Image (cartoon, rainbow, N blue to C red; front, side):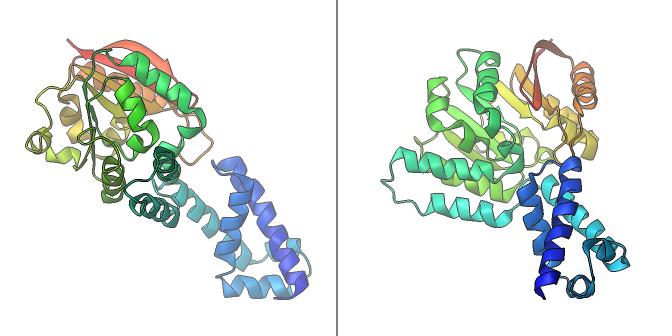
Length: 302
């Protein structure tokens, strides 16, 4: 590509990135990187840009318009994926796995944080981690020993073993259907006191007996259903009774205040879903808290 063509391509990427940032939850530099990565693998677009006299001339072509539309769709779908950058997630996981057995706690924590940062649902909480932890601390009974975190993802890598032990938690169960998330939690569990973090490959459709057979106590002190209820009720509403039957008398249920990909407030919609879920299943809401992008309703049975 000519020098002029390279300049035009950069200008086009910057212009499209500005539009993408207004719509989606991605920073401008990362948007430009993704756009250029996609476009450099599009020979038709490169040919159009190289022969154009200006960015505006290129923008008028059908080839550019199609490329811009496709790239925006690609960014949107990446942002909606829990592992938006699979390579980064895999690298973080292998970094943790390959640490020597006697690696200092600081290195383990650093590797665990990298895993959390590469998992979208967990990474959203990194910017206000202290606030998030405060909500968990104030909504959990002080004598909680056994916690089951339904659809945990890689949340244990953000919480950390020290935090769990300081809260008096002796068993933190982390069932999830995502094999990659389970592998990451298993790798982290191998670095912390035995039995503290317990990963499990599990789908809500499997039912609770599947976890009880693997050692989950008949009754836990609290069940966390963080960002799970709205997702399951949208995708598989017939599984709502399984979620409601979580083996604990106290359920901490959360929902998103901001959409995963778009810059859009969805709190009212998500709250309605969670409140209806509680009403339908005899769960009484006793506490209501929020962080920057997540609300939490603590519910009790009866």
